Image 1 (cartoon, chains in turn orange, yellow):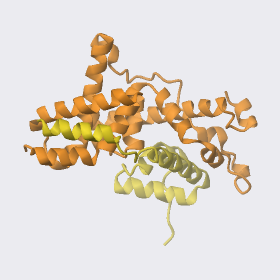
Image 2 (tube, rainbow over the protein chains, first blue to last red; image 1 turned 45 degrees about the vertical axis):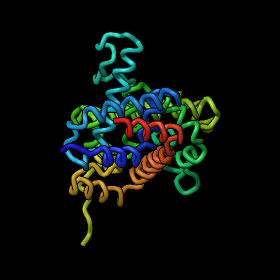
Image 3 (tube, each protein chain N blue to C red; image 1 turned 90 degrees about the vertical axis):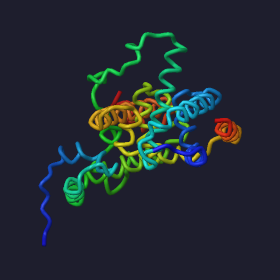
Image 4 (cartoon, one colour; image 1 turned 120 degrees about the vertical axis):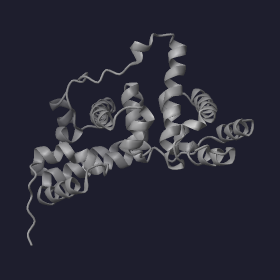
Length: 199
Length: 79
């Protein structure tokens, strides 16, 4: 299909908020985010013949945004391509779960430390934890959890198989929880017992 | 008819995030749901992970700044 200019504008403006949000989390900078969105829209219009169907617009445009970010950053860093490739092998120290750190079954009827942890988290704690994630983890969590894309859409946006989305997302969420745990510890959010027991 | 839970905690927890994301097949979704009805610990974990996802989802919803919106409009007009 070939999308008309009017339809392109309508579709872009309808998801400009999420596009800008993802761009901001990728670039960590408002001005760079605006430039990234603008450059991506130019590339998207040029590549409009590659849009398979109207229903695929969201994944297609996020794919162009992500590819534009990668190529712009590559240019800026003047790094060889290899350094930007994602190592899918176990790079983590193992799965991490805040729930497992805090859950105390015998307290179930009296207190709920893990829910209390969430209640105390501020928006800026979440922003900070997301910003601290490695790029390939940040993008998958932002697309899945912040912007609510399906695994199929994320696979299309990142140009990886759905199985890779599943495994990368699992590792990314684990990394996010580890980072959140550390953010919380640094801001005295954890209970003193939990913080001293689990480092 | 009483329900049977064929799924242990280990498997339920392995599937939990995909369950929350609604990315399991219908039968797998049902199996996890059945397990959650009978296991308080896994249910609590599901509640925690769901609420964390909701907190992240609440970070979205910001509209693009007006300047960016105007810039994109102008840009597209020039295509």
